[in-house]
Amino acid sequence: MKNKRIPNKPSVATLSILLKIKTFLFLFLVSIQLINSQNTQSFKISDSLKYKTYKELYKGLNSSYNDSIKEKIYGNAYLQKAKNENDTIKIANAYSQFASITNSQIAIKYCDSIIDLTKNLDHFEYPGFGYMVKGMLNFNLGNYQLALENYLIANNFAIKNHNLKQHFHINSNIGQLKNLWGNYNEGLEIFKSQLKLLKQDKIDSKYWKVVNPEVLFCLSNSYILTKKLDSALLYSKKGLQESLSINDSNQYYDFVGQMGIIAYYQNNFKMALDSLTKALPHETSSNGLLNDYYYSGLIYHKQKKEAKAFYHFKKADSIYELTKDIVPDVRDIQEYFVDYYKKNNDIKNQLVYINRLLYVDSIIDKTYKNLNKTLVKKYDTPILLSEKEKIIANLKTTKKNTLVVIYVLTTLGLLSILFFIWYYRKQRILKARFKNLILNKSKEDFPKSPIKEPSKKLNGISKKIVKSVLLALKEFEINNAFLDNQLTLNSLSKDFNTNSNYLSKIINSYKEQNFSTYISNLRIDYCVEKLKTDTTFRKYTINAIAFEIGFNNVESFSKAFYKKTGIYPSYFIKEIGKQL
Image 1 (cartoon, rainbow, N blue to C red):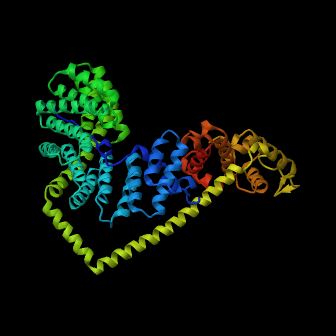
Image 2: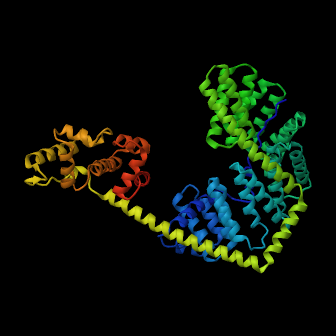
Image 3: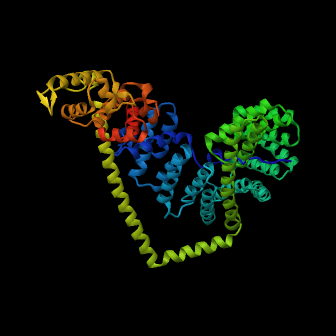
């Protein structure tokens, strides 16, 4: 029996009892605005909200869920009230909501803020909650080593503070790491103990209703991984009933999909496809979608329906391409395509997937090998953890190390300030240069190059020749002939019926620049106007733009653009996109 069930990522539903996520959505948007708006004044609570309690502000925010303006007002008021009252826990609560509803990379920064804000508090929830969520976010990003490290720190706080819910949730997450690595029996024991704990009524009923289906799901998954399909089916059916009792449709269809996978391993392909097809439209995670497509592909492959198998494996592979989350099933998918293209004599695509398979193998070997060592040495050996904590405590008590820490932090702080000042000034200069380019009149509003009256002689060049060349240059500029990437001084002098020496001297005298700079500046002026007025042109890659205006490579184009405007083309395109 081939068994490659991917463990689900930690769900937001489990945290819903700890966090009221929905009503804090616009608090997150407000906080982003407060952090980034460096040049704006601090938000002031309006008179109508100034004396409202947190509960009233919370209620107002919840009741105006569909009114973004009111939500913004209530959100600002809540956050500012917490800041005005210097209420650390209230601020941390707000940041907790932000970490739960934004993308993982930004959310990790909020977790760091929570940890930094509450690290010296003796509190039931914090800073353990910050470490726990940070672990979940790293798990979602595939950073399993970092996930485990944060879980272990959070678990220490949970045990110290007798926070049963946190301890319970962290154990579930570590159980998922066990399953992900392949320690299926150990993962199974964790989830069996979790279910036993729930049955002891040590967790309140409201929380129990949320986590019980999730524990049943993880337990069922562990039984699949340990090839105990009857037990897996038993707990999936229990989970199905629990989900119906609390009207949780998402969880319900998770169990429907789970039963489809169990049916696959029981070789009941008809039932398996029926369950997976029903679950697919209700999947809310990329991991779940990849699972459903992957197992559907396996079924069609075993039924020798290769067209359908290819379609479903391709769907699963496209999800991996989007998430870049390398879980064990991703390897099977790459292996399938290597065999598929080999059978179809498609050497080019076969080579593509061989390289991808080698890359996936290298990542799996590196990531999972380290994770396994950490699981065995850290999680399963509490004595080592205890010794580590003692060493850290002893080091912190020494005066020498304290001074070193202060010195390092001070140095880093000063460097950070200097970097911020440098970066801020640089951004102001770039924005000023960008603004200057945007405010410049269009080329159609003035002549491309003012033509001086030709002098009588120019180093032996007659006035007639000078005038003829200047008129030709004017026509050359009007027709945008400078966009030709094969253009040289010799080729242009031949077009003007003159020699390269005369043309070079005339350009140097009347355009006040050498030939190369003259052509480069014409191209950059053309490029700036084109980017300002042509939406299609702005969608080109930098390489395509460079070639379009006559440059033969990106490097020479970028250098010329910066020399002429003081900013790089990528920055100009990004900023003009923001304005438009």
